[in-house]
Image 1 (tube, rainbow, N blue to C red):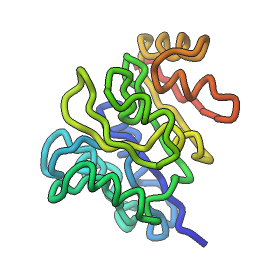
Image 2 (cartoon, rainbow, N blue to C red):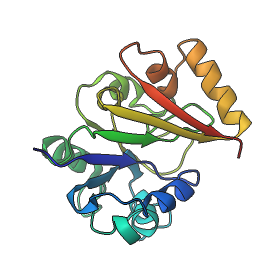
Image 3 (cartoon, rainbow, N blue to C red):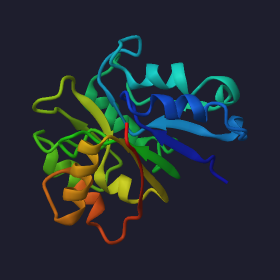
Length: 195
């Protein structure tokens, strides 16, 4: 059987969750850990989600997990996306923990990116994204790939993000979280805390 795959998000909100999860008594040696998305920067860059995961989740009990980073800046972004889509190790994860921006983006599926239409329509697992406002090009799971995750979680904090989520769920909007929340075939479990 295939190894279970856990995809996690970067950013500031998931850091305490990832640190706590690193102590969980699981058979981590049999688990693959990857990212929902990452910025197209070298791993030693402060903006790298891979570095965040190495520093937080891949410690303690979770240290033996196999890490599958998304970024390899020795090649081009488009070549890397093609390689990820061709690599069976980078399949649709069994579990994904998403975050959400105040613009309603999740993963790196930004509504202001020229790749928006492709990112929400393609059946490929990975897409390249060049956000309009946010810095750095990105590699991201596509919307279709996220819809195929068996156990999909959204982790958000604060009243502003709760308002964004409520609005996104109430009516279909041009943002990724609304696309997921309004998809009848997608089960999205939301975990919210006040701060």
